[in-house]
Amino acid sequence: MSTLSQAIKFDINLLHKYDQPVPRYTSYPPATELSENFDEIDFRGAIASGNLQKTPLSLYAHIPFCDAPCYFCGCNTVISTHKEIAEPYLGYLMRHIAQVAATVDRDRLVQQMHWGGGTPNYFSLDQVERLWHCLQSHFTFDQDAEISLEVNPRSLTKKYLQGLKDLGFNRISFGIQDFNPQVQEAVNRIQPEEMLFEGMQWMREVGFEGVNVDLIYGLPYQTLETFKETLAKTIELDPDRIAVFNFAYVPWLKPLQKKKISPETLPSPEEKLQIMEMTIETLTNHGYVFIGMDHFAKPDDELAIAQREGKLHRNFQGYTTKPESDLLGFGMTSISMLQNVYTQNYKGMQDFYKAIDASKFPIERGVTLNADDILRRSIIMELMCQFELSQQEIEAKYHLTCDRDFGKYFAPERLKLRQLEADGLIALEPDHIEVTPAGRLLIRNIASVFDAYLKKNDLEKFSRSV
Ligand SMILES: C[S@@+](CC[C@H](N)C(=O)[O-])C[C@H]1O[C@@H](n2cnc3c(N)ncnc32)[C@H](O)[C@@H]1O
Ligand code: SF4
Figure 1: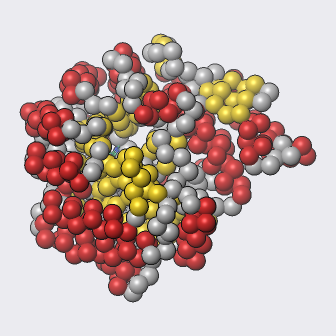
Figure 2: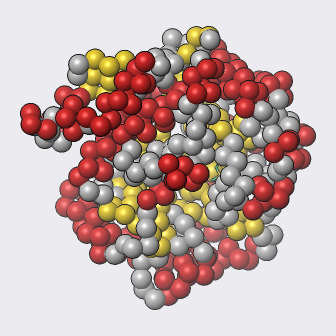
Figure 3: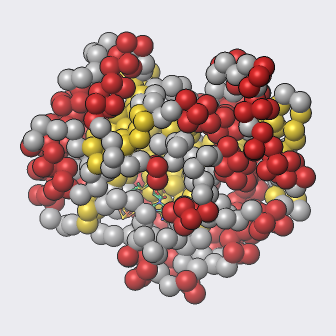
């Protein structure tokens, strides 16, 4: 057992004991609860209610294309080198934006916008500009809005980055995954070190304020030693935030993972735990703050500041400093997350096109939250972001009165909480639940106590917690 920083304790026995599939809680209920039995009237109603309350907005645009498949990839992508397929999609995407925007009041401010994929830099700069102007013409952006996109280092140029900066993007997520050539080859993602350093230098030269780097641990042929080197080079790049994702190996869901990644090439669970321990130790020793789950940020980064001030939030895009906004997702497969309604657009491109042609919202699945969902969401998000929970605050916010106070409402959960306490993951005070340093790495497991949907037979839908 070792204490890596004041905030986290690495306990290998506990990590083994609790290594089981659990949702990542970028939402509650998790996206697996969205069903086809959903009426778009609920979506319209939720937008209207956001209009009344002037709820701020967060926008997401999905650009699904990639030139070549990375074998580990868990995202919803369309692989093609025929760049012309992007043009019709852009047209439909802009029609979708106009369709949704027509129902949204113009005085609601956009606080955050993110373009993800796939690979947003599959679009030419001209296509990026057209999408940008479409969004600007339909929505009102806050001056301080965080505007970000994911870029794949292959096929990036300085001119392209300059174009993004000139438009108004201020944050970039740079997908590195791993520096090691053997790992890169095994996952079909060859990007030499020089390319990564050059890309990072360009981002700094054109003046991006924030740069995130994505890494994945648990990939084929990774060892403690190779990942040490990947981390050393990443630290040399000096990003503001680093995400170190646990490889979600779900061959039963992802045919390419099944075909191209054989389990014998993957690091063993013991080695993965060592990689995780070394990662936390290395990054915290180099001044990065552990935000939660798989995120690290420099102490002066706004995520780290928000966490210190108790103002961190979580939505489908992960940790964020922007509270209580309605997330509108544009394009195929995108998720919208309004205060009490979540929807997901069609995953198939043709289904998405057909719905837009028929002037219908391209919603494939959705869920309308009830009062119990909203209460549990609040608790789960508080634990995920702040690592503590005040029962009194929850009681006041959700009007839980004496005959049904927190203790009575969550009486069935008490046994599991006691078990977590006995294992040293939480401390239970009369009015307070505090996640211990040993519990921080198992925060998904702790939050899952309050998940009313977590049934045993659902577990295979989720990746493992370690
Ligand atoms: C939506 S992807 C797109 C990023 C961009 N296309 C790229 O590859 O650089 C965002 C991030 O998800 C992560 N990711 C993708 N598949 C994953 C998997 N199976 N397990 C864990 N993380 C994954 C990668 O770190 C990737 O950078
Ligand atoms: S990791 Fe990025 S570039 Fe690779 S297939 Fe997935 S979305 Fe495309």
